[in-house]
Length: 213
Image 1 (cartoon, one colour):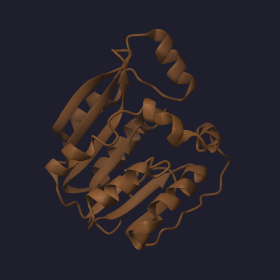
Image 2 (cartoon, one colour; image 1 turned 45 degrees about the vertical axis):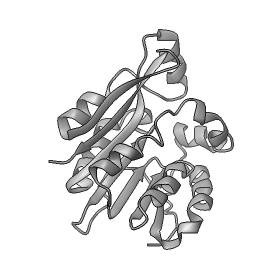
Image 3 (tube, one colour; image 1 turned 30 degrees about the vertical axis):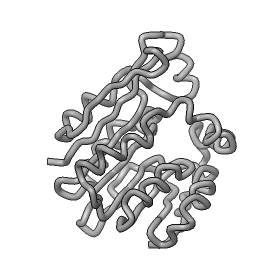
C-alpha cells in the first residue's frame, strides 16, 4: 500500500471549509472534548487482537491512525477523510509506518474493499455525528465493507440534556440527539455498548464495538 491521497475535484463543502481552518488548531484544542479516542482501542483489541485490514473513516489529523499502527503492528491501515488540510497533517504522523498506511481523500458512500476480502475493523472516531445528512448511509456502507465477523467501532458524541449546548454543537456541524446508537445496535452484534458522561453530565459520549453477523 502507498501513503498517498486520492483527489476528487469538486466544490468545497461546509465541512471541508470548516476543517481547512480548524486543522491548524485541532490537536491542540480537541483533546478537551473528544473523550475515548484512545480508550476505544482496548475493547477493539479484546474483540480482535490481530486485525489484518483496518479502515478509519474521518481519520482527521491521523492521531488514531498512529495509535492503530502501534497497537496492531501487522495490520494494513487505510485512513479516509474529506479534508486535504487534515490529511496533510495525517501524512506527517503516519510517515514512520511507510507503506502500511494508505490515505484517501473521498466520501465514504461506497465500499472500498472491492477485492471481496473486506476490512476486519472499521473505526469512526467523532465522525458519524458530523455526517448530516449521511450517517445512516455510512453505517450501511461500513456493514457492507466489513469482512465476515468484522468489527465496527464508534466513539462519538451521544446526547445532552442542555438545549444550549446542543445548539452550540450544531453550529460546529455536530448532531447529538442519540441518533447513532439505535442504528449501530440494529446492524451489529454489540461487544461493547457504553454511554459515558462528560463534564459532570453536560453531554454524554458513545463507546460502541459491534461485530458483523
